[in-house]
Amino acid sequence: MSGSIWDYRPSVGDAAGADLVGFAVEATDGHIGKVDKHSDEVDAAHLVVDTGVWIFGKEVLLPAGTITRIDKAAEIVHVNRTKAEIKDAPEYGTSGADGSAGSRQQVGAYYEGFPLI
Image 1 (tube, rainbow, N blue to C red):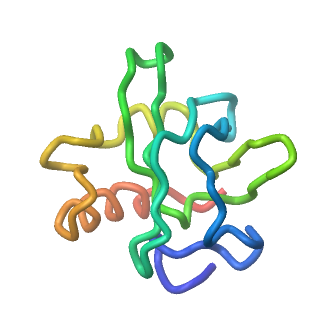
Image 2 (cartoon, helix red, strand yellow):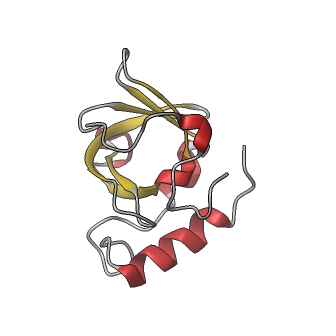
């Protein structure tokens, strides 16, 4: 894995610069939502995922380091977290996950607490 949870894994391939908005997001145990926003900011790359009706429209911040594969042809982003782990993440737009440097530290600590899958 690259330097931090906020960097793309080298195995993901050409992720930086790709427009991922609208792509489906697949957790290790199934579909979790779609990409609503995407940032390639150095050391802060992330997705904002709209989980839709699955967990009542919650948006969550997913660090780029959770992405295992991007299937551009099928427009699917695969992540190495379960639906439950994503469901329990701090909600995007709250003080705990608004994309700021302070919230990235909190969100990063949350995701780094799980083993890599």
